[in-house]
Each structure stands twice: as structure tokens, then as C-alpha cells.
Length: 464
Image (cartoon, rainbow, N blue to C red):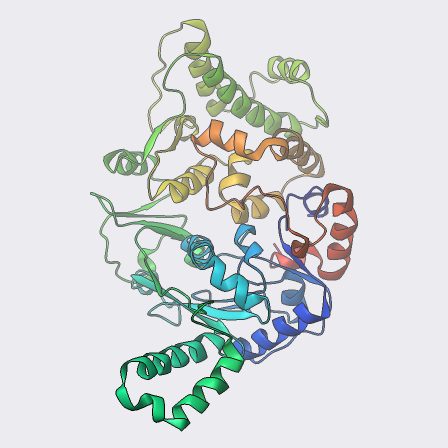
């Protein structure tokens, strides 16, 4: 994992916390939420305020997410809205946090200028005892306040102001006036600078969860279904009858088509379509060549073509299927007959724009694991788990490709592959404010070395 951190491919876009004032605020919030504190004076946090260094210090990567279903959060700055969410257990969590911060940007900016904001994504369960229990989560409510209760105090003061302005005898109520003055000392002038957070609730419709080996729930669709990595039926009855495993390729293909969730990557002939196919083919070819002992560091397209000829007989069916499609795209060949049982089938698809776009691309990434770029973009946890099993030569090749062909233009690559640059699985590509920490290119190596020394990236991933 060292390579990933050093190249900014892991723990990237985290917020650097290194001032005594911010550390003190974080500890107050952490104490209020969990009863625990950190002794660290320099660490990094994600969008929820989770710190991998503190997780290692406490030997608890879930210290802000009890049982994986009760996500708590600590906000020190509104800049956290551009950070990733580490150790996500529900696919909706980052989207909810980002929307909460964005919608309350002005109020949170004012509140975090003096204090930390602590909160929780509240749902109806406390333990993920079964897949069915997770599906009981229908609504998620965001609750938040500063460690000093500024928001609640402002609500009380607001009610007092209403009484003062509407009740005839309020002008003579010395106790009310004194109480208002006392509260105003804590909140400031809320008539000019309102200290109020919008009440926000979110429907939990279709989602992915890491629990029980990982599974996807599509229930806001004409044909509801569950698609899981492992058999879920042993955990009890499920509220949706259509339950498939990753090996049920035809059933999954039919489900995605019936719910109008996917579209072909290649819809028409042309050089751009062919380029996407050749990139995917290169990743599959690299896997075969590396397994045969080749070293592909800084491999050129010419070198890859040579390897393609050398290992043509060993290349998997997925490669040959994509090659047939590439011939159609660039050589006027006939459209190839590739059914859902063909290994190339899911490599040919991407999610259609819509509310389920992100989790559909996550699912497709898991169904096409040789396309490590899509796996990295759409499903970080699955990518890191796979990366830990690869040879040193493959790790080097993958890091080189991601650094050179993705990091340089993240938005452009996502737009080409998925038709959009806005994916919840990816943090935003925006310049960092000073509070975000020194993650500029010239300083990234030193920060990465510090983080590696402190937490050990392999431990932060749960000994994967």
C-alpha cells in the first residue's frame, strides 16, 4: 500500500489537522460522541471526521461508525465536503454528508469558526443482524450541533425572540430579557447571522452495503432485486424475492436491462469508442503478461502489442470478445454476438444516468475485476482488497497507469468512461484551502511517509 499512498492514490484528499485549536475541538467532539479522546496532535480526517491515524491509535477503525450502521461525524471545516469517506459500509453515507455540508455551508462555516460540529446519520437499526435488518433502513435523518450546543441554544433564543415580539407583556418581562441577553452572548446576533441547520432526511432506496460480504439492493426499480457476492438466503428470509449472486450472470444482465440501468459503452463506431475498448484490453493483457513473468513498468503501446501477439493463445475470452467489438468499432466488421454468459459482456456496459448510477457502476466494477481502473474509480474498497493480493510487478504497473493515465485528468477520464464526472465514490477535484493541509504535489511525499510511519496502511485496511 506504500506505493498508493506515496502517489496520492490512497488517503488522498484527506483534511490535515495539525493546529492545537482544531485538535482540541476535535477531541471535544470525539468525547461527546464516543467518550474517547486522541493523544495525537497531527492527523488527517475524511468527510465524516474519521482519521485513519486515530483509528490505528484506538485499534478501532469503526470508532465513528458503531456496528457499521450508525455513522457519526465530526466537522472541523466545510472543506471536508470534498474529502473521501473511508471504510464506508453504506453507499449513501458520503452523498448524505456531502449534501448536508453543501446545503448548510454558510451556517457550518460560521459554527466551525469557533467550535466543532458533531452529529449522526440516524436510522432505525443499531445492529446489522441480518440482510433483512439492513433493508429495514428506509429513512436517514441528519442531526448535528456544536460541542457547546450552539444550534440548540439558538433555537431556544429564537423562540424567546418570537415571544418578545408577539406577546404584549413581554416588554416588561425582565427575566425573559435577561435570559435573551445571556443566550445571545453564546450565539451572537442570530437575527443577522442565523445559527440554524436545515433539518434533512433522506430516503434509503437502492444502495450497496459492505455487510455480509457485500450486496446491492435495487428497490426503487420496476423489478426489485438483490445482487450479492455470497449466498444471503442462509441469513433468513428477505423482503425481495429476486436474489442473485455474482455468478448468476444471465439473471443479473436481465435485471439490469429490465430496470433500464445500463447502456453499452460503445453505442456507435468511431475512434473514441475503440480507444476505450483498447484500454480495457490492455489491462486484461497486462494481467496475463504479468502472470507469465513479464515486467511492464513504463510499457509503451508498441510493447503491449508485441506482448499481445506473444500471448495471444493465453489471453482470456474477455479480451477476445472486446477485440471483436473493437473490430466492429474501427474496421467495419460485423457486430459480434456476445451474450451475458460471455466473460466480455459486462466489460461492454456502463450505468445509465440516474439515481442508481453510482451503485450500478460499482456493481459492474466488481463483475469486471481485470479492469482495475474502473475498480479503483468506482469501488475503492474492492480495489484495495484486490491490490493486496497482486504480485509486486502488477502493483507497480497498476500504480504507474493510475498515476499517469488517471490522476492527471480525473474528470476527463470519468466523463469518457461513464458520461459524467460526478461520482459519489470519487472525492471532488478542487484546490485545497490552507486548512485542508499540505497535500500539494511538492509536499505529498513527506506527508505520505509520515502517515505510513504512523499508521501502517496495511493495518488501516483491516489486515487485508
